[in-house]
Length: 351
Length: 246
Image (cartoon, rainbow over all chains, first blue to last red; front, top):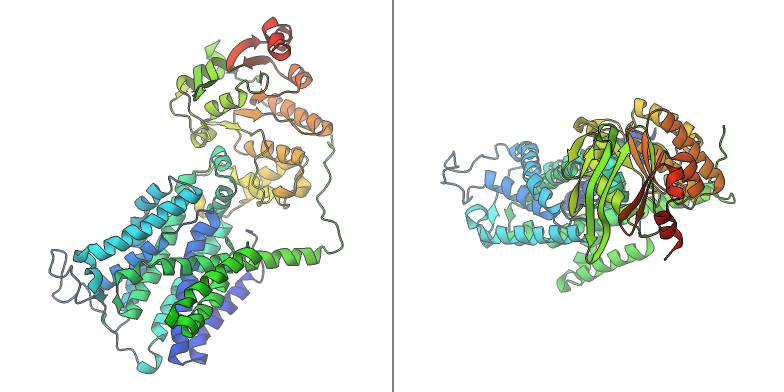
């Protein structure tokens, strides 16, 4: 689980390299557009997995941070921001212009950091509960923030939505900057996940996932450990939300804090494998194009949602632990085929 | 109750679950450097008392002192850091983690430890040393879930020693363990005691208790009914009555 495999780095570079090459190989707009959303869900799933997959705490409220990130970016660059003209406004047009078009991307790390800090008190309250209660509490968080987005018109402009200026990127490669921004968020998430997975923070999270009470008995500062990870995960989620808002150039409450986005960032983790590094990415690479295809074929009737739900049911029936752990099990069975599982017999005292 | 040398003391601890009084007015002292046994029939409140002493449950009234200091709101994390730790009746280990990971979870971790590698060299060495002593060194990379029950008990015992505690509370260390393993556990307890560790042991194996412990505390229906050297307690009519009577 925490061992460093020699070809891990090579594998990582190959996968990220292949993802980076994608928009150059396939430059049709609709394909790169699917690519942007695939990477967005891969990043969201990775961020979610970093907390929920490692600690076992199923958060259903992460999309609230996605929305906060989206509204932060939108408010910073929007000329129609309702905050404009308030005491907080420094310029007559927007807080900040998008410059040559890349400035929102540079602001993202700050957005991530700010939302990570903001998530600490929220997480502190939510993390006083466990297991299914935690899932319900965080789900409540989702609807609270969606309602806030509708009703805090002074910040979000309510249901009229908020627009972000459209950058004048070259038309033929318009999606590329967004694609690479999403890839950047994903790579950051992967690096953090990898790092957490092999250091003490990860070890303590795994211990919490297995037996939190026992971990407490061994001196693990459970609340602190969970909170740090929750904040990192929330920050990353917000960064993906920031890119998303800029990409769409127009955001509405029902899409910025959307249960479907929440489901879309959880299901890939279940499909690929909870608590694994590449599982969420693999899950997103399979599910998002499939979802887009289903939306295209069955979209008019919204039957695609039923199809999507069916996929989830099938995963839970056939691969309850996800693809990567199941493959690992199969590999182990193949390696030890014929041989009886070798758990050493009781040890006789040496002395 | 000679307060001066007592490492852990409780004063009139009481815990009620609804109408049931699990622990009633229980005062005891564990002398520094001793092996104290806590015995009693099933349901006499031993594990509840353990939970009260280690912060897994909160007493309705009474007080706990560790190392001469009052523990106002016992909390397992803080107590672990102060040098008091425990094992559980059912051998609680982390089954998906390897033995070495199980061991290193238990190291004292300052805040900055969250950026340390999972298993540091010093931790690994100490874990190896302990696993060697417990006869588990060969299984160091094995997943803990694959161990036998007895081995899990040994592993749990070994993990709580990672932080070099001063007092270990063992909840039925030999329950459900084969005789060879019982000997092994007894040998470990003696060796650790010889190095100055204080132990409080809940145990049903009477020959073991009588041979091992300096002092025996007997609970019945949540009340302390006897407290003294093994030879004395063995012949206490109240104790015989609790075990053999109704």
